[in-house]
Length: 290
Ligand SMILES: N[C@@H](CCC[C@H](N)C(=O)O)C(=O)O
Image (cartoon, rainbow, N blue to C red):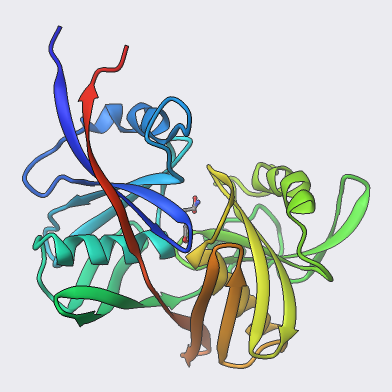
């Protein structure tokens, strides 16, 4: 039997953990095999364990390309914590030695600014771009143009949902208390609800004050994670849209804190996200596994 070895790096950003694979010198995992490979390697008992896999490859017109797969094998458009891991990885591995990177993602071009010290990346600031509230773009199946603060009946209870796309689809629910149990119960129901044809990430958010929130995310294709960067951005943007938040917001997630800075352009709301990423270990996979 032919065996093959695959080099990987395990990283995390606020405990949202990813396995990074460098495909800049050629495809390592065949395109049609990627979903199954990702499911296998992300398994926390039978694999390496992770919330997803990030593939690094060459871009035709930008500096470099970022692809993110969730632990269930589905490909997402964007990942806030993952793109910070990616930036540290490509910089410190010498794949791209730029402190300002233009990155190709399925959610379009993202600009990353790296702060370094002694050749190590200390923090990464990402321009996450402008959000859209248009139902058809999120997407949400509704006749309404937007889906903000909509009262919905779920599990016999009425809750208010707001949907937004910040590169990937998110739903935000403001709550009195952040509860993991509640997120685990309601999260999958909303993620897979037929009104969200592409499914959705689900964020449960408590406003502590206009400059600070606490939240937990049920991620599409993963479940509860210790942090979600796009979720922090989506929640801050929805909070801002509803007049609950100022422009500079500290987001408290189970895995740590993230800084989100809102900007407004052409009547739209966008955000910068700033935070760290950590390299945990490197390894060699010997495929196929029996
Ligand atoms: N953890 C990520 C988001 C990853 C993708 C997400 N699960 C999706 O399917 O859209 C983040 O930090 O943003």
